[in-house]
Image (spheres, rainbow, N blue to C red):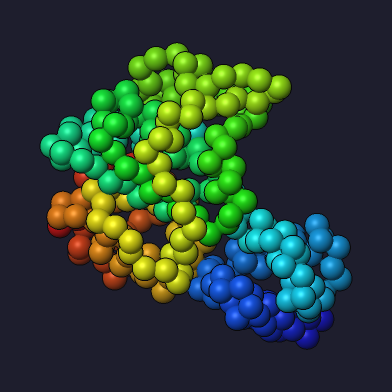
Length: 274
């Protein structure tokens, strides 16, 4: 029994290293417990008996790797998630964003796009969308494709609508989508100013100066070293006095960049670059 766990850890390290060498996707500094859970789930779904067998499969079959990537990145999101967060953006951040002649926003780890459309709707209602460029990035190409389509199951729309209303929504949420075949198709004009792009917080660098960076519920899957790398990218990207927004379980406290930001709305995890 004592040999099983050490072997598992070795196999996981070998798999993660193999993925990095073969496909340039870097999961080496993701949280160990999180990666272990996801790999064991993938084993069952992909019907591999051992992690070594999974490694052999993904090394020789790029399609199998793309299947595994869906389990390693786990796209989970919802529109206006944590409504109080978006309400705080409306009240605390938007008045300051109005002072910029043009706005650039980076949504890092955008997953399947729910956060992107939420931000676009908020900015449209505040009269800022037309002068904003949104960079929506993720490492999962399938998630990015779904985000570009803007099609979501009607099953989730009740939750999304309630979130929107609690986030200070100013219209009927149904104004923003068309219902068809059990899906909600969101207004294509919401993504006219959105650039969707492949970007890894583990390996890639900054690509633009921004006024606001939103990275929510991504850093919880990173170890401290990778969290600090991400914070460094956000700090470099943000203009003087720019805004950083994190997820409800994430914080700048104890990071290498804790002194570089001040809390604007700490309960909602909204910070401002010093």
